[in-house]
Length: 276
Image (cartoon, rainbow, N blue to C red; front, side):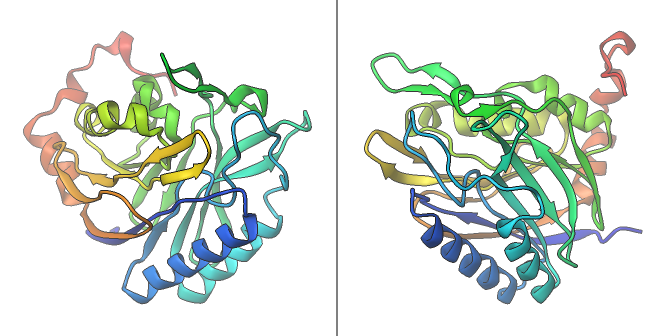
């Protein structure tokens, strides 16, 4: 039987274009989280490099490259599961990359890799223009990984606005879904918490969202507010801003309790159920 609860740590960062410094800080935070008892540690989107809009992402690599190898060693050293929120993965269409979330097992091997499906192409009224698709190729597959705590679904940032993906992950068995993010400060103030709580409530899952925070470069800032939300929509833990760790405990009994008391997933019309 899977363990009932998980000690989890979310890493909140202000990544920049200094890749070496970003990686050093991320490793330091991950090792600190393990030393404080976390068994599952999650890094945010683009933790290794957060580019200025309109620039090419340097240093893309395969899934057996420097970043995964380095953090695989961290996972193995501390016997923790480690989510690499997203890294720039080589694609078949260089210089474009995949924005890929990688889940590492406690032995340092890759449990799952998810390539971000929904790309952030928007123009904020009176604000910034973002064209993620100029540098990134979209993925095309929903991913659920088997872990000691049960099935875990993967997503990245802008995916949060697409409930269809979360419903598919839920019907594939996910009891936790990760949302590593670099949510803009402008949209985050209004949409971040409501969207996280909505995805948790409607699917009766835990939503775990490690976030970027603060100013990364001229014209680019992230909202922060890393968060763990339970299947009832209750915020279990939250860190407002600033770099650092958010530690919390996930009680997996909450999933079955909520689903038993309010079995809305069983009531979904058969013709609306996601196909396997």
